[in-house]
Amino acid sequence: MAQVLEFKLPDLGEGLTEAEIVRWLVQVGDVVAVDQPVVEVETAKAMVEVPCPYGGVVTARFGEEGAELPVGAPLLTVAVGEPEDGTEGSGNVLVGYGTQAPAARRRRVRAGTAAVDGQARRPGTADAAPHARVAAPPPTAGTAPVSGPAAAPAPAGGPVPVISPLVRKLARDNDLDLRQLTGSGPDGLILRADVENALRTRTAPADTAAGQAVRTPAGTAGGQAGAAPATAPRAEGGVRIPLKGVRGAVADKLSRSRREIPDATCWVDADATGLMRARAAMNATSGPKISLLALLARICTAALARFPELNSTVDTEAREIVRLDRVHLGFAAQTDRGLVVPVVRDAHTRDAESLTAEFARLTEAARTGTLTPGELTGGTFTLNNYGVFGVDGSTPIVNHPEAAMLGVGRIVPKPWVHEGELAVRQVVQLSLTFDHRVCDGGTAGGFLRYVADCVEQPAVLLRTL
Figure (tube, rainbow, N blue to C red):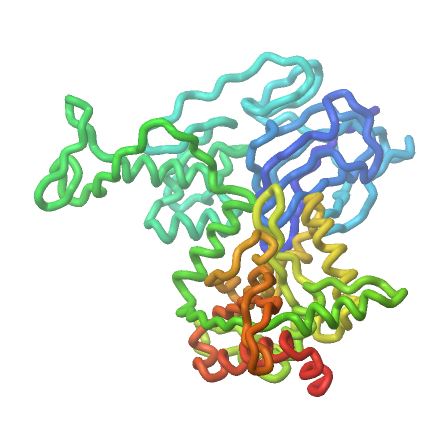
């Protein structure tokens, strides 16, 4: 006799607590094998194909494409044979991409679920076998719309149906009582969207009979003491693009960097003719071709060895600067999904050839959306080659929690005084944005000047290795 097992969204690692369904890879009724990818999801870090630990027939899917699910929410159910029939879970434990097969159990039909063609189904979920939809009750004032099972607000002293620490923090930072919300997730689980909707409802301007917000001289909405201030009217027309996924993660990280890091930027023009000639000479041999980014990365790691203050982070709670002994070099990569920063681990131990190969591998993974969360985190310093966009200069925003970022503009022919005479040389603008808490301008200037010297005279790098 077949069992119906529920597969939940697994822990995707790196502190990620939710993911958006991008594309289902299976349909209800499909036969799936153990560890076969069944859904493609997008986290704030990367695209992930999630494999199912069970082999059998898909009986239901939970969540439509575009829906955001928390870790632990049901993804699908699979009808599998009994263990004696030879159908079992994979048993793999894979955080981020993995499957974890719990002990086999029979799926019980909970109170409040609808049995459709012999299959258990939660009200309001999508894509089960042919069924009659169960409508959820309309949302009450001040709560988020309910798209899943209706759940009454948690009673005082009872458990709050929320598992995401990000959701709890968002509510705590805005003095929002989660017990007053009705969650739209499975079994009434409170999602981030529920909190955001409640905050928007709370801060909406009070309407008069004419439908217009009234502000009193005291600055309260509708003249009520303690009411939230009226927000600006929403603009007419235009396109609204949700800040979620990679775009949302970038927005959050850049905003945090601006809030927490007292940054400063210095820049210098450098004659890159010598560097370009050195690269051409290296690539004239029969060996692997060396990329310009790899040479710039090699210069960065050498500069960080001389100025380790810039390979550090700030522990704000302990009020300490943590100087790091390994260089994990991030590099900015623009993709169709937005800006991502893959990380080259232990870049200080790699030569130009190894760096070239790793940059190529990570860039291709970024282009195809297959970077893992581990390949997008843990950087200690970032190299940003925005010259590929045809611009000369920029003031980079530090990639929090790092302490500095080197920006490189385009390399173009320009008039330059060389050996006392005016000549046309290959010139590049280098800019360094740094956390002023970890060092002063003398250190930052020394780092940037060393980088410029290596660009102008690559032999400088050889002398200091």
